[in-house]
Length: 169
Image (cartoon, rainbow, N blue to C red; front, side, top):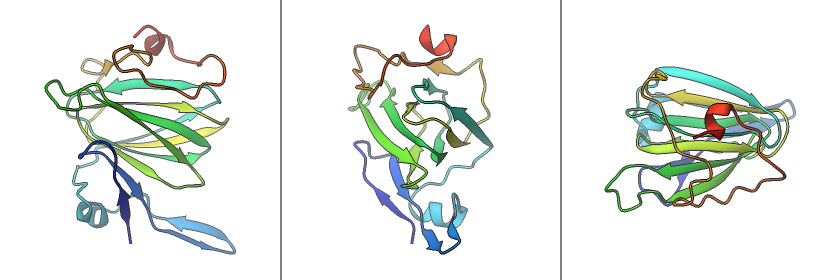
């Protein structure tokens, strides 16, 4: 049975999927509309994406009005971070980090109104994203990964490898 773990934010969830293991390896469902609706994730997913990152790649902190995300690591391990960017929220600019990996199978539900980013802790990280809106560069926003008012404590091993856009945020 699909279960969840609480986060510091009522709307965000860590999702623990059913993983069926045997001598061949494992099988898991990464999404089922019926099962996810039963745990309160009712978004209509419109777009999927996959990224490949090497160790110390830092992506984020991105958000787009109207977009929720469901993320999970298909290979490797990441430190995944969300930040509440909803002005007026009692948790505005608070952050929380999670270790997601191919081994622990955890998924993170990132609600609309939260910035999202991650640091690759291993080489060969493959991250899968489900998105409730089509990516729109005209409305995408970026919160600086080292914004002093947020104070994310990244477990960096050296300098982060970033896109020019993320580094200049």
